Length: 292
Image (cartoon, rainbow, N blue to C red; front, side, top):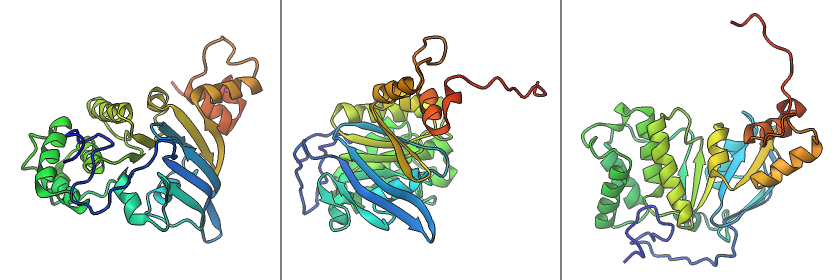
């Protein structure tokens, strides 16, 4: 019997699998050493060293094209690194890919759902792929569809779902096996306030129960509200890494005048200052006067 009947619980073990792996709490959830990925002569990710502690809500930020999605693809086994190593919960991702995949859930930016299935059919397929027995899969499918407010869409094909509904279904599929680490690539992009609230409620619940979440998002207000630790990548290089308070202190130390009105710097101001320089603290006076 699984240790809990909560489908989002990090200890919700995959029934029917032949391998049960236990990890001490001191083992980092994610560790990368010298992680590098090149495409021909272009280096997308260069020598990234990261450590994500268990239970962290980890925000991974960067401008467009900075290397965020490439990094997540490497961490989740969708893309092989050119060099460097990845450990997931103490397991070498290169030599233990099956065991690693049992411990993680992934919501990719492209979703990659099967449009000709219903939501229940899709979740049943994913659950069985993870080795859950039929009864466990059916029970978790029902719970997840109800939690995601998709229970009334039993006859509708996924291809007819709205973007927000598809995002919720993708998250349900990513957690049906009870992963200990959840990787999310832009989960709030194109999602309305109701769907966003549902997603945030599930993620906060998972963190409260000890799971680890690795999130990329351009919605910095959400990252600021949810994440306990933040790393910033730019042009393939890791340029900042720490708690929000540590990043704020670093920016303020470089800019002792602050933002001029003694207000606490927002994550957006911190991000722009680190990536783009001081104008984030004191926005330029230049205006596009011909607008409006």
